[in-house]
Image (cartoon, rainbow, N blue to C red):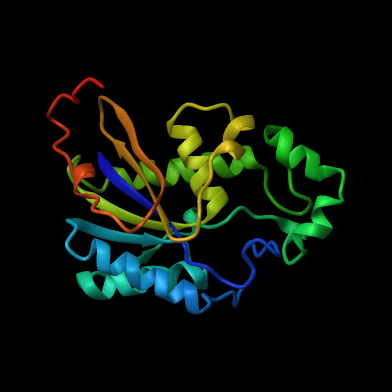
Length: 215
């Protein structure tokens, strides 16, 4: 199947303050653009076969420097985008934290359906099916980059680690971080989660036909 580099978009002025969700015109700030360039600098020699992205501006802007260095087109995948937070989009984190449903989001997310939006469980299925679909288009040794969002990547990591949905909030995904999921017909590996892109990732570009060494 495929080695996925799941990359969260770079920093923007909404991070940690407001729930941007799927609202348009949320762009990277200065630091976010620097993060995007750093991603490109570190991964420019990686054997990346394709670049996929959520259609949101902040993910496209994060993916663009890498796409330019590799000479690849960015393939937009709507199913890689952020959770549909519905009526919660645009609200401040402080404002949302005062709502009764906030406890459900934090402590029992498998029961959460955002007013006017989708559920975490539905979003997780959407995202996992998207990766499985992409993997069918590639070989087991192919490396692809997927630019997405914090909750989206957390849900994917939890899914492929076979974690309970109620535990997915334990996974931290920082801006411009990389998480790696390797899917084959015989095994699933998650060698890196939430790695800040300042290191050599060559160790994840492995031959899936080789038996993993015991640890």
